[in-house]
Amino acid sequence: MSILVVGSVAFDTVETPFGRAERVLGGSASFFSLAASFFAPVNLVAVVGSDFGEKELEAFRGRPIDLAGLERVDGKTFHWQGKYSLDLNSRDTICTDLNVFEFFEPRIPDAYRASTHVFLGNIDPVLQRRVLDQVERPALVGADTMNFWISGKPRELRETLTRVDILLINDSEARELSGEWSLPKAARAIRAMGPQTLVIKKGEHGVLLFTDGGAFAAPAFPLEHVFDPTGAGDTFAGGFFGYLAAAGRHDDAHLRRAIVVGSTLASYCVEAFSLDRLRTLTRPEIEARYKAFLDLTRFDAL
Ligand code: AMP
Image 1 (tube, protein in one colour):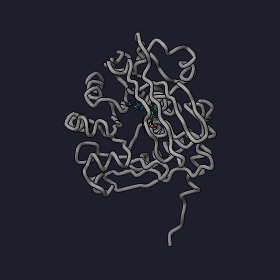
Image 2 (image 1 turned 90 degrees about the vertical axis):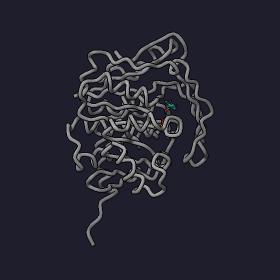
Image 3 (image 1 turned 180 degrees about the horizontal axis):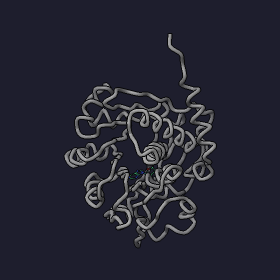
Image 4 (image 1 turned 120 degrees about the vertical axis):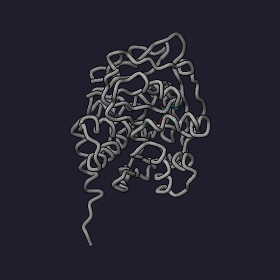
């Protein structure tokens, strides 16, 4: 079993009320890979520029993350800059320098084609489809997208969604994609577009899961100190998908556990800048917080 992930590997400049981090390692595929690698081997597909060096690669070393699909081309690595509001609930994108990402054409190494699980990070839906065209028969296809593609390439996105099993998006994206304000109604509409399973992320308000079996809700872990929310969504996706790949099943019971595993990983991610906390995270810490989630959400029948 292995997970192929395609997405961004980036330099991020992040400002939060607690400090500023300049050109630190980021990108959707970076957060996803580190989180998923706690559970399953990861095959990373992304592009970086000539300014991306050994120091940055260090973050992936010593983990089951294959870097044969991390293409290096002349030019600058994708750079994203964001600034968070005082309550950390919203952020402004200050700049998005696509750089080498602008001409990204995902090329899947032969050794990756038999990956059992494929996660399409938030990139152009046309490129997401090209990735699917290059793989054999994955047991499960997950995907993420954002407002930019929902409004910018609606038809292309709808075509990609017909080939996706699990879609992970945030609440405003679910509303925009479906044209429905009510999230259960939005879920029904989106699930009719292809993905049988829909995960709606609501930031500090937790996650909703919609399947044929109904709905499930999990809170975000109530942390005393949130330092930098960047990458929380991608880290959630990595934990969620990594757990499902390791389990080899995605019935409702496994999906519910995967939601809490994803929430656990995301709760650690936000405790420090960049991938710093994920890099020091241990399996016993993951297990301890998963257990704390059980205590947090347990209640008796009336
Ligand atoms: P999240 O906080 O989960 O939304 O993810 C933030 C990460 O997404 C940052 O590390 C950025 O480098 C990356 N990112 C931001 N904008 C884009 C974009 N347009 N395409 C790909 N990755 C992006």
